[in-house]
Length: 190
Image 1 (cartoon, rainbow, N blue to C red):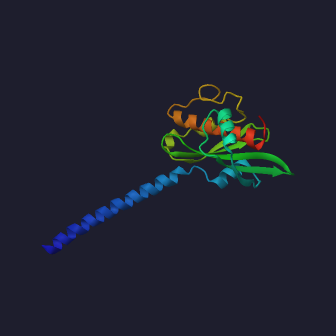
Image 2 (image 1 turned 120 degrees about the vertical axis):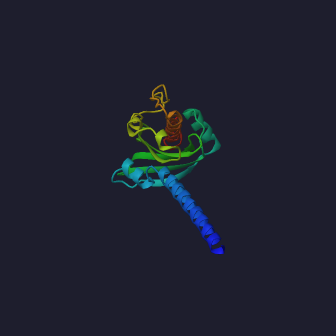
Image 3 (image 1 turned 180 degrees about the vertical axis):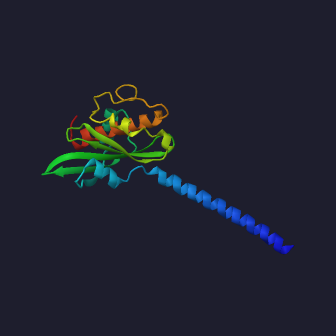
């Protein structure tokens, strides 16, 4: 009788162990699915054949207020990571990271800006929401070449995407914030 009881306990233990392993595997898969593109891959795509210089900006409260007013969006942080690419001493482009919450999960966007302040491209590096909510590459390309003056808002100069309303809003706001930081802080233009 005692050996039968031990066998039942062992089966329960194995089942619990199997469920725990399956849970860990699903959790690890979910975490891995969050990374859409590594920072290194994104920078290689943004600046082919170049190695941009990374620096960190610590915005003052006045700069934060000015950027938020210009972007019409609240900055998630006063600390901004910037990558600047140069050739022959001239800036060939800049990229800024913006990490924010879409609905309940984080998203990180790399906004790549031309020297004159136009958007070169926006790349999603990390996306914590369900993958179905992430707009397709073709939609992302519709943002290219835009500036803050180009009515860069969903439903105006930016197409809405059914099923990705919050993501489109969050992405557009991230791009607006990065363009505002580029204009006001990096290029010093009003």
